[in-house]
Length: 192
Length: 192
Image 1 (cartoon, chains in turn blue, red):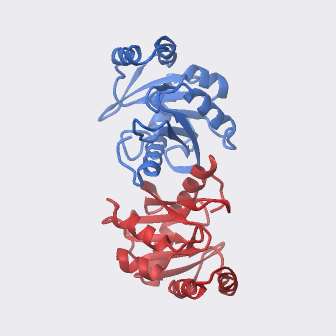
Image 2: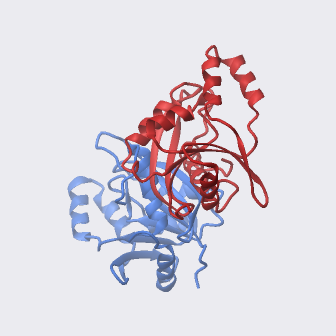
């Protein structure tokens, strides 16, 4: 059984325009789906390769580190195609990771886009594959698609259930999105 | 009776150092003491005179404006001695304002500091006085001191009660502080 107040770190990036070099990334330490314990912040380069390293250092240097039982990501990319290598992030933080996708990720299109836009596309594609198998969790009114590492499917689904409250997306990700978009734009928007 | 999910806008500024010119100010749209509906952001100059104008424009341009039933401030200063003229903010937004103080504000010391540091101290002192009478709300384990405009004491105290959850400070202010300090420092601290 998952504790109702399990500490979840929800991570999301802010919006950015093409002429910018970096984008803000917000981590929200949430107790279950209930309330905020802390806010972390880092920056990653747009379309860069530093997302894994930046997250890992943000998490490992946090005073909340010992309490965080699971990391939640909204997909595996931050700042455009700056891909989080979930396998590496797990090995560097030792904290289980759940990647949330609201639709089935279209891997074919992702591969095509990587091939078209990046000389190092093989490296990036390998990072995409490192996130592992995409699984479907059927809820009453919608489905959530997830990938997980360091944690089994049963516990993953319990944590997702605990963290769903006011939207079709877990609270820690909903709030990380509101903060990141609010900071960048001056006012948050509702679509994570 | 106050609705349990009354929309409260909690406002707090981030930490800053003396060589900076501006500081970030975060507004959190909260439903009662329960959850976040949105995040607003502006900047005010340190020790400047633009706090009232910046808040008023942040609030009046927000899509949440019609839903916000009350504004909560953590004291009346932002960015050092950039004083919020509560009377003016109320007249410009038409939204009632509650100023929360965890201790009785030491008006004598504030007056002295203003006189010592600002040529326009009379103007600033008038803004301090515009926040009105400081009232005490006794709770079981501690007291909260508040000022209010556009709303009577009974309703003010109901709203404060509704919004107290995880700390001796209303949730909208606790979370605004976590966000503002997290953004500036990379990690939030617990003292609002």
